[in-house]
Length: 332
Image (tube, rainbow, N blue to C red):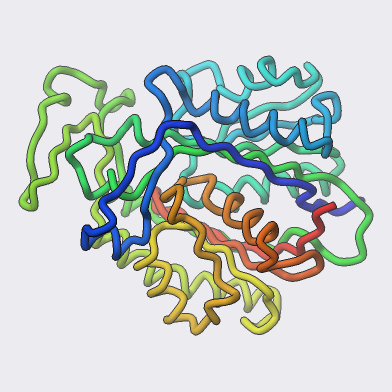
């Protein structure tokens, strides 16, 4: 059977912007200067279409070649139908194309890659279009600095293709899940368990002055930080135990682009050299499921990592959910 590899990545930011105060202590700590924000009538699927159009325009593939679509989002158009089905029609993909949504956040890119690899290496697909797209801004209360300073909207389109290669290009993988942490990063209302009502829309101010309702995104920053510091190093070790590699085997590391303070803490804890460690969010913020592909292709375009090099990808966050994998770059 042919192996799978990442053939191309493209991404899209909406035109709207929201700037953080450069003199603010928190801005300096998180390292995020500006986020891109979707318009009032602009949704995650619209960003997804723009990212895929850029990919098609690059000549790396045409719609007729796609035989499976995976769409990762936590900002779906509807409860049902599946947004991936709507994207199939909007993008002009064949009706013989499989299409599904996965509801994952900051670990979503790792999980989606594993699904694409499985589809290709079992012979079920030859060209998988994997789209990540989120508009967390629509869940954020404008007076909740705890999340407003962090999250930006974006979409990324990754083409995973089949090719006869001598070395494994994607994988192996390690995964992890701990649903006991769900309450620490959540939009409490809006699903069937707690529908949005006038009561859930009531705003409350917390002890440090942040305002939100149950209809808004809530993040317990301290708990998320503790989770990352605990789980990320052990996940790195689990992947190396599985592969038999060491940190020196990797030319580049692309972790979920959460914020500068968290990533620098993890980098120092793992003793990864700065020049091998991706930091690509000052001009876009934390873009959730799209942060890893955006950082990866930017690192490649900036010459920080090249074809043939082994790269570690690692996502972690909402769920709690985490995962990591090896890839070997093979951009054409």
